[in-house]
Structure formats: structure tokens, C-alpha cells
Length: 297
Image 1 (tube, rainbow, N blue to C red):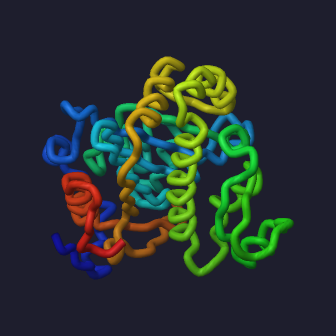
Image 2: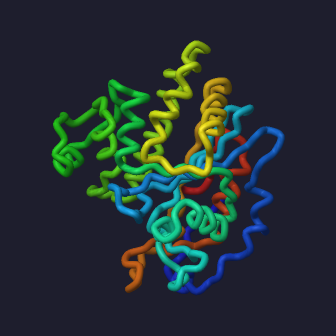
């Protein structure tokens, strides 16, 4: 399906358009079936211990264990969407998390994009650093730019470096280059894929599975989820027993489907063509993996 760009004129009144009923698109993008498909909402919060925080990363991971497929959808945090119950009506997507945590963010995603989330997991800065150090004590290798080094005063040289928890957190949060938040989203997806590989390597043998419960206990600090320990163990076990064959990724909004706008209550936002992005999501989720997309990322 070829999704063309749209003009700024088509988007200028987008904030006044009510999202259509999610049920109209839900059946085609969702969801649980005989293949055991699950939709997980992965949230990286900017919390440093405050009672409220914003979501730095918003990723939906659709996992089909028996097929060995994962589809990653990064939702840009500045997307201008309707938030249920919000007095302003429309606001940045990450405002939903600030106001109502995981649950309101799940509802907001469903009402705007028609994707029903089965489970959510949010992790703060300390939790992310701790988790990376647990699964990859020697670090995860990524390509670090000079701009990133200068911005965060990192003690590394440009090029490939194995970064441990605190340094890798800087890598996924960096946005002070020409790609800004769009580059940050790419790095977040990159690290999710590499984390999956580290998990597979760490628990690739039957003997190593005995360490899974202790690993989960150590990982749960600074983590909020609607799953209990047993459910988390079940998901991790599936990742071990059903090797991942394909990982596809998508960014919402897709290219040429948004304009930069500013509102007094929200600041700078991405005002998106909601219908175009719903169609991109539907196309991406319905196609078998690996997905060969005809629209621009």
C-alpha cells in the first residue's frame, strides 16, 4: 500500500478531528489468536525518583512466539493526540503517561491508533542502567558519534564502543544532532534488538534457565508492570524456547504524515495525519514478516 505525503493544509485542523472508533480497525490489527500473539507496551520514563514523569520512549512490541516474529512500533512522544479525560483534549502523547501512567497511555494509544495492549512495562533511568548491567556486564556495542561524546562528556572515542548501563542510557537519550528525536527513536529500537540478543545468549541453555527467577527479581527494581513475576518469567521463557527469526520496525508518524506545530499548552508538537498513520500501522501489522514496506519510514 503506497501512502503518499499530505500537505500542511490537510493537517492544520487535525487537532479538531475526533479519533474514529478503535473498533473499526482493531479486528485487522489485533490480536490474540492461536499463534499466541501478544502486544507489549514498553515505556522508558525520565523519572529520577519524582512522583510524576514523562515517557522518553514509547514502543509497542508485537510478539508471535510460535512464528518467531517481533514487530516494533515506536510512537513519537511529541505526537499530538487526543488524551481521554484530559482537560485540554489534545496534547503530546507523553503527557498521557505524565497524567495517568501506564494505564492512561494504553487507553490513549488504543483510542487514537486502535492498538490494544496486553501488557505494559515501564522502566526509569536507574532501572534501565541496572537491567543492561545485569544482561550485559561487558556492555552492548554501539556506534558513538563525536557529537554524542561532546554532549554527554563520554570517556570514549568515536566509533564502536561497548557501553555499560549508564553510558548506554546516554546513547539512547541523545538527540542534539540533525535527526533530533527521530534519531533517538532509531537508537531505542536498535538497543531493544540488541537486548533481545543478549537475553538469548544469557539464557540459551536449559541449565541457565534456573537463573531466570533470580534475574527477574534483580531486574524488577525501578520497574512498573501489570504483569506479575510468573507472567514475566513465562514471556522470557518463550523468548528462549522460540528463537526470534524476524524483527521488523516502524516509526509513527511515518514520513510526510505530520507537520511541526506549536500550541501554548503543549509547546512544539508533531501534528499527525491520524488516518494515514492508522493505515500504515494496519499495513505493517497485517503483513507477514519480514515486512517489505512500500511507504517511507
